[in-house]
Image 1 (tube, rainbow, N blue to C red):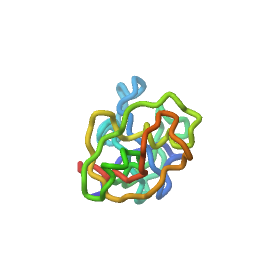
Image 2: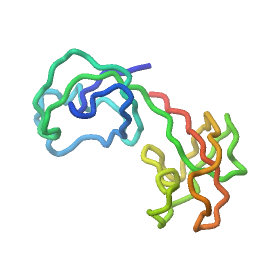
Image 3: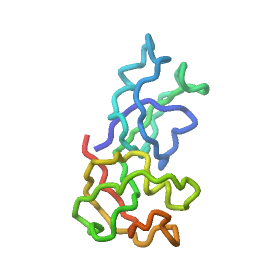
Image 4: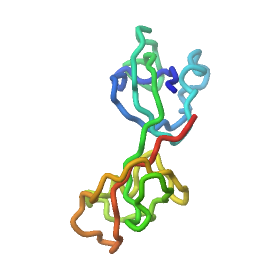
Length: 148
């Protein structure tokens, strides 16, 4: 189910994904707080529609904010291959210091936390790396979006 919120004008395009980080200190005293701060912190969202609301001034976003419709979005992640089955639950394997690895963004994906299990909605296949520097046997999956 979609939810209406305010986001930065430059992000307000259908298909844009972002992880909601919560309130900034610059939000204090803003008259639009209720409309902006209505998402779940740490969750990945996808813009599914835009509203003809115009642009409102914002202390956080230099070009202002506008109204959009968002839905929780799936998170692409690498998990242990022996746990990679659609419909099952899996957790991230742990942090990885190899930030130059093409799989790093999937081993430490924005919108998912370590020590939390997520339901796998789809098995994508082999991760983008050829060899895991930590000798992990990984498979790329999509975690189902969380419910609001």
